[in-house]
Length: 332
Image (cartoon, rainbow, N blue to C red; front, top):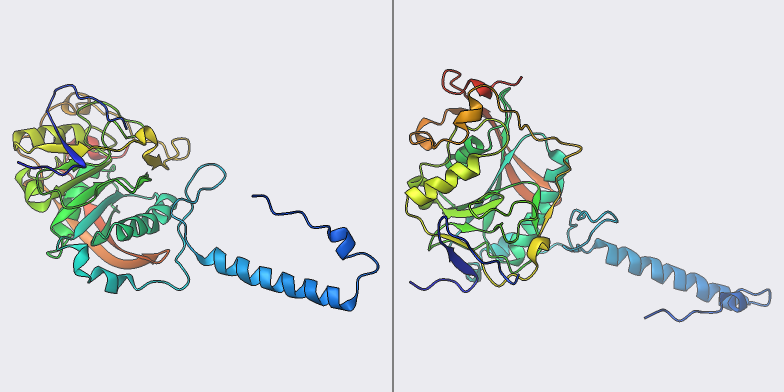
């Protein structure tokens, strides 16, 4: 089987090798504005200032995907002046036949969402990836359940998409060579251990993972037993292996751990890493039955929003918890 040159297959539970991943001339303004300056020179200076202001205003309208603030955090990309009609561009056959459902499991991290949505919309448009962005917003009073929200996103993504990206809201791709295309040969782990800024163990499949909808269904989605932060990705890795799906990761990316920008501030938003009662033992077990087949949820509302010129759909979701099976779903 021929694979994309940007994707390499991963051998499950085997060690892998890392990728080799003019100064403006100074003008003597003192002479120009000396006591001997004439009315004509003052008029010329005023015209220069007006033209400079108009030029600065025009340049400030253009968005720059790589712009950073002084502390290294990316600025929210601004729309160009004038804006290009991206809808007509997406109808161009050169964009290909596939459409991505970008699924963001979400709760209360609005300052990250305001950066993420316009950034990813611009990034995917530059790569000519048809897409729609789904923010699956958990509005119940249970602990956060990332895996269940991704299951909801899969079910609510509609028939107009044929593959999905399980995408963390705090992880921004900075290298445009990263592949977000249709993962026909098997699940594609964009945020691979060789590139992710934090997690480097070989069975890691979190952060950003692309799958066809058929492959996600073959795994019965993700387990709904993981309330709080962490471990759901590790269980999903075992599902990929059980379904005999070949996992792929990027090749030819030379930016290493600078490939992504992690915008989460742990001091400001602490992870819910509590392990309550039996959860300490259950978190390491495989869930053979759970997933799409036992997911229980209710869509409270759907909202079509535009953030920084980028469209997205917010699906306000109430998850249901069987407290006999997972009593650790309750906030403590």
